[in-house]
Length: 139
Image (cartoon, rainbow, N blue to C red):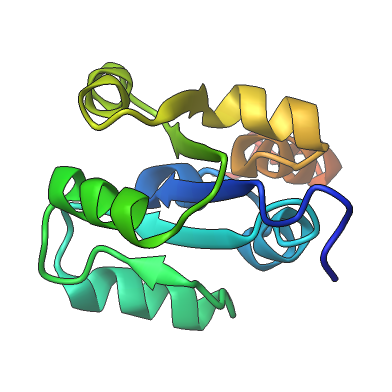
């Protein structure tokens, strides 16, 4: 389960980044091969994160809970002693947040490309291409 680089990285996903991926469970399973700790941070209420991770069978090492993203990332950085702390996000504000808390930032699209993960929009467009054409000759 743990690859040769395991233990050198803590990886945090912004909830919106995780939602942008087609298979969050597979992403977490894959990330665990090269990251020691993997979790989710969000400004959403705790139940939103919990419901999403349960529904998608994501086993997280940490999540923001009642704290905001900034406080959560600072706390995780202090608690999890790894060489790198990488924050995967989706918005311009995520870049600024990562800078403030001394995390590396990686856009979800770049992370997906580098790791071979499928974005949810990719599967949606594939599904749409597989659908039969809609008839427009109905009354």
